[in-house]
Amino acid sequence: MTVRALRHYEHTGLLAASQRTGGGHRIYDCESVRRVYHILALRELGFSLQEIRRAMEGRSSLPNLLSEQLERAELQVARATKLRDRLRNITKNTESNVSVDELPARLDAMSQDGCGHTRRRARAPDDADR
Image 1 (tube, rainbow, N blue to C red):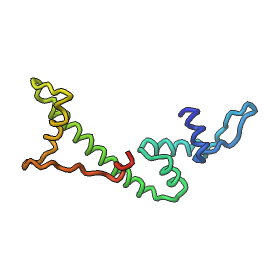
Image 2 (tube, rainbow, N blue to C red; image 1 turned 120 degrees about the vertical axis):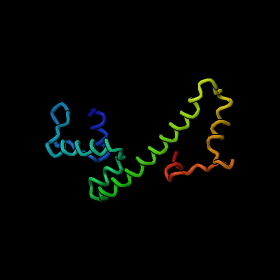
Image 3 (cartoon, rainbow, N blue to C red; image 1 turned 45 degrees about the vertical axis):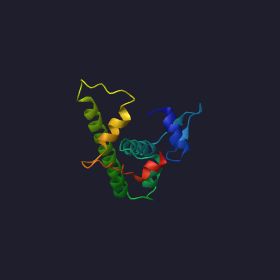
Image 4 (cartoon, one colour; image 1 turned 90 degrees about the horizontal axis):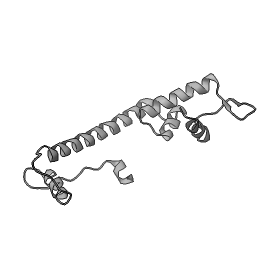
Protein backbone atom coordinates (compact mmCIF):
# COMPACT_ATOMS: atom_id res chain seq x y z
CA MET A 1 0.00 0.00 0.00
CA THR A 2 1.50 3.30 -1.03
CA VAL A 3 1.33 6.55 0.90
CA ARG A 4 -0.30 8.07 -2.16
CA ALA A 5 -3.09 5.47 -2.09
CA LEU A 6 -3.67 6.02 1.62
CA ARG A 7 -3.90 9.77 1.06
CA HIS A 8 -6.30 9.24 -1.83
CA TYR A 9 -8.54 6.96 0.24
CA GLU A 10 -8.50 9.56 3.00
CA HIS A 11 -9.23 12.39 0.58
CA THR A 12 -12.22 10.51 -0.88
CA GLY A 13 -13.58 9.68 2.57
CA LEU A 14 -12.99 5.92 2.45
CA LEU A 15 -10.43 6.10 5.22
CA ALA A 16 -9.56 8.40 8.09
CA ALA A 17 -6.35 8.64 10.07
CA SER A 18 -7.12 8.42 13.76
CA GLN A 19 -4.46 11.00 14.59
CA ARG A 20 -1.29 12.67 13.35
CA THR A 21 2.20 12.95 14.74
CA GLY A 22 3.82 16.29 15.44
CA GLY A 23 5.54 15.94 12.05
CA GLY A 24 2.19 15.48 10.27
CA HIS A 25 2.46 11.71 9.69
CA ARG A 26 -0.80 9.83 9.79
CA ILE A 27 -1.45 7.28 12.51
CA TYR A 28 -4.06 4.62 11.87
CA ASP A 29 -5.84 2.68 14.61
CA CYS A 30 -6.79 -1.00 14.34
CA GLU A 31 -10.20 -0.22 12.85
CA SER A 32 -8.64 1.93 10.13
CA VAL A 33 -6.10 -0.78 9.32
CA ARG A 34 -8.96 -3.31 9.09
CA ARG A 35 -10.75 -0.90 6.75
CA VAL A 36 -7.62 -0.71 4.55
CA TYR A 37 -7.64 -4.51 4.29
CA HIS A 38 -11.31 -4.45 3.28
CA ILE A 39 -10.59 -1.81 0.62
CA LEU A 40 -7.65 -3.85 -0.70
CA ALA A 41 -9.72 -7.05 -0.84
CA LEU A 42 -12.49 -5.34 -2.78
CA ARG A 43 -9.98 -3.64 -5.12
CA GLU A 44 -8.40 -7.06 -5.74
CA LEU A 45 -11.83 -8.23 -6.91
CA GLY A 46 -11.95 -5.34 -9.37
CA PHE A 47 -14.40 -3.05 -7.63
CA SER A 48 -14.30 0.69 -8.24
CA LEU A 49 -13.82 3.04 -5.31
CA GLN A 50 -17.43 4.16 -5.70
CA GLU A 51 -18.64 0.56 -5.42
CA ILE A 52 -16.37 0.00 -2.42
CA ARG A 53 -17.78 3.08 -0.72
CA ARG A 54 -21.37 1.92 -1.31
CA ALA A 55 -20.56 -1.56 0.06
CA MET A 56 -18.72 -0.27 3.10
CA GLU A 57 -21.46 2.23 3.90
CA GLY A 58 -24.08 -0.50 3.55
CA ARG A 59 -25.79 1.25 0.63
CA SER A 60 -25.21 -1.75 -1.65
CA SER A 61 -25.54 -5.40 -0.86
CA LEU A 62 -22.19 -7.17 -1.13
CA PRO A 63 -23.76 -10.29 -2.70
CA ASN A 64 -25.35 -8.10 -5.41
CA LEU A 65 -22.06 -6.30 -6.05
CA LEU A 66 -20.25 -9.64 -6.26
CA SER A 67 -22.82 -10.95 -8.75
CA GLU A 68 -22.45 -7.83 -10.90
CA GLN A 69 -18.66 -8.13 -10.77
CA LEU A 70 -18.90 -11.81 -11.76
CA GLU A 71 -20.98 -10.85 -14.81
CA ARG A 72 -18.37 -8.24 -15.80
CA ALA A 73 -15.56 -10.78 -15.35
CA GLU A 74 -17.41 -13.35 -17.46
CA LEU A 75 -17.88 -10.77 -20.22
CA GLN A 76 -14.17 -9.91 -20.10
CA VAL A 77 -13.27 -13.60 -20.31
CA ALA A 78 -15.57 -14.05 -23.31
CA ARG A 79 -13.99 -11.04 -25.04
CA ALA A 80 -10.48 -12.26 -24.27
CA THR A 81 -11.35 -15.74 -25.54
CA LYS A 82 -12.73 -14.27 -28.76
CA LEU A 83 -9.59 -12.17 -29.20
CA ARG A 84 -7.38 -15.18 -28.52
CA ASP A 85 -9.31 -17.22 -31.09
CA ARG A 86 -9.01 -14.47 -33.69
CA LEU A 87 -5.29 -14.12 -33.09
CA ARG A 88 -4.84 -17.88 -33.24
CA ASN A 89 -6.82 -17.96 -36.50
CA ILE A 90 -4.66 -15.25 -38.03
CA THR A 91 -1.36 -16.73 -36.91
CA LYS A 92 -2.01 -20.47 -37.28
CA ASN A 93 -1.09 -20.44 -40.97
CA THR A 94 2.53 -19.34 -40.67
CA GLU A 95 3.20 -19.35 -44.41
CA SER A 96 0.61 -16.65 -44.98
CA ASN A 97 2.01 -13.38 -43.72
CA VAL A 98 -0.87 -11.02 -43.06
CA SER A 99 -0.08 -7.41 -43.79
CA VAL A 100 -1.66 -4.45 -42.04
CA ASP A 101 -3.51 -3.71 -45.29
CA GLU A 102 -5.03 -7.22 -45.35
CA LEU A 103 -5.94 -7.33 -41.67
CA PRO A 104 -9.35 -5.54 -41.80
CA ALA A 105 -10.61 -7.86 -44.56
CA ARG A 106 -9.30 -10.91 -42.68
CA LEU A 107 -11.06 -9.81 -39.48
CA ASP A 108 -14.25 -9.11 -41.41
CA ALA A 109 -14.12 -12.58 -42.98
CA MET A 110 -13.74 -14.15 -39.53
CA SER A 111 -16.81 -12.22 -38.36
CA GLN A 112 -19.06 -13.71 -41.02
CA ASP A 113 -21.34 -16.62 -40.33
CA GLY A 114 -21.52 -19.65 -42.62
CA CYS A 115 -23.92 -17.85 -45.00
CA GLY A 116 -21.66 -14.86 -45.63
CA HIS A 117 -23.57 -12.53 -43.31
CA THR A 118 -21.53 -10.36 -41.00
CA ARG A 119 -22.37 -11.01 -37.38
CA ARG A 120 -23.03 -7.86 -35.45
CA ARG A 121 -20.88 -7.31 -32.44
CA ALA A 122 -22.93 -7.46 -29.29
CA ARG A 123 -22.33 -4.41 -27.15
CA ALA A 124 -22.30 -4.46 -23.43
CA PRO A 125 -23.82 -1.46 -21.62
CA ASP A 126 -20.37 -0.24 -20.58
CA ASP A 127 -19.08 -0.20 -24.21
CA ALA A 128 -20.77 3.15 -24.79
CA ASP A 129 -18.54 4.67 -22.13
CA ARG A 130 -15.32 3.69 -23.90
